[in-house]
Amino acid sequence: MSNVENTQQQMRKGVLEFCILSIIAQGEVYPSDIIAKMKEAKLMVVEGTLYPLLTRLKNQGLLSYTWKESTSGPPRKYYTLTPIGVEFLAALRTTWDELVIAVNTTTLNPNAK
Image (cartoon, rainbow, N blue to C red; front, side, top):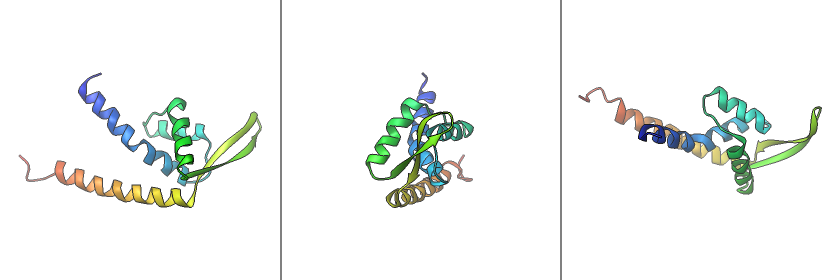
């Protein structure tokens, strides 16, 4: 893997948690729906990455889940943000907005030569 690819991968990993929490904030969601939305956004995430991350976020008190019956198999876990998760996501969003401004300020300087 080239240095550029490695850096790109690290940048994507850095926003993974923020994006996943943002998807869950839109409403109760099943993990395969998260994977589909991430894929649609060209941010690939696999089950082997997603499930441990969801478990960690749940253990941190940011997520809760409910079991729902499925028409095509066993019951499924649907995730939602807890009130603490909502606050955490708001803080991440603020940080993201600040980072976007900082990056744009340093990389889009019209006086740069």
